[in-house]
Amino acid sequence: MPASPNRSLDLQELMDHARRSERIARTLFEIEVEVMNLSDSTAFLDHLTDLVLTRFGLDRVWLVLTDIENNQRLCASLSQQGAQVMIHRVPTVDFLRLVGNTRMPALIDQPQRFSQLIPPGIRQHIGSMAALPLIMDDRVVGGLCLGSQDDQRYQPGMESFFLEQLAVKASIGLTSVWAREQLRQLATRDPLTGLRNRRDLDDTMGQELSRSRRYTFPLSILFIDCDDFKQVNDTYGHDCGDAYLCFIGEQLQSLLREDDSVFRFAGDEFVVLLPNQDLASAHRIGQRFTAHFQDLRFDWKGKQLQATFSWGAASSEEGLHSPEKLLRAADQRLYDDKRKRRTEPERAPSARARSTGYDEQL
Ligand SMILES: Nc1nc2c(ncn2[C@@H]2O[C@H](COP(=O)(O)OP(=O)(O)OP(=O)(O)O)[C@@H](O)[C@H]2O)c(=O)[nH]1
Image (cartoon, rainbow, N blue to C red; front, side, top):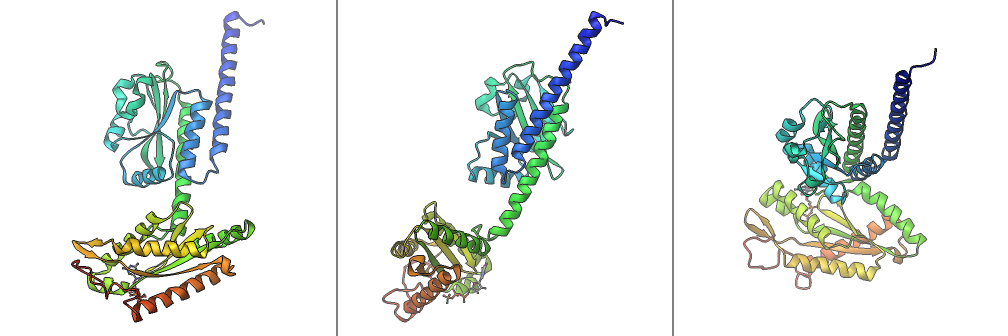
């Protein structure tokens, strides 16, 4: 029996709908494949928002993050890594009041009523939007927001199956990439100072030495050890000692170029890696550190403490081509320096011998 005109139209509509669904499912799959192996949350979110924006022809895509504790660290990490994604912070109570805690996409065709969810600079461009809940460790941490100038594109009650899928994929992806990032952080960072740790130093030195051989440039290091640090702990307590180490780490880091890195080697010892710098420039940098700390005081509850340290330099240009040889040579020179400073204080006065006129000296 021939199909009635109405029936063939329904069938056509059905087929169009099926094709459209297939295209969306394929695009979602392609996006998932493109972001699944990214190694940090910045790359993941930058890439994801960019792909969603372009592949689905949206006008704006941004991230809303609530003020729960875990988000502070995520935000700090995103800003440190120079994330491009637009991030809008919203108090948790306001987010849940506007979007609800149903874990379903919120479809919004009256953005003026939801303006708190939209970064001020783009409010005039949003006619309708979808806020897809982002869930990490079973908590709503914010939303991936898709905005269109078209005020009909998202309307409450419309079919949202693919938006739900995108919300789940984004949540799973972000949770997994953030967990990997945290693990990496634990493995390579010193928990007290936040500096790179000794394990990372071993790996990085090996890589930098290979690079220095391949491209024939020197790799130099500075080994730094605080003077009389035990006295800081004994006099002012362990908390003060901890803060003192953080202070030294921050100061060293602030004095270095982008290519150079500072590591906490152990206790009160730090190592600075100077790729493409010869022994003479390592010496200049060591002297610069000493001069910088001479004029600086560490403030501990109103007491002004002077931080001093000894250092030794070593370089691959001296024929030291393994991490162990470089570290051993620099460590030996550091202790020569320390001994000299103690036996000949007038040549290199240590903090104990120096009169600074400040409240406290070490
Ligand atoms: N507060 C604090 N102290 C630490 C930490 N790690 C190691 N220490 C302490 O650092 C001190 C290092 O002492 P020493 O190796 O004798 O070094 P020093 O007192 O600087 O003496 P010299 O190196 O000879 O100038 C020890 O008392 C350790 O307990 C830490 O993470 N925090």
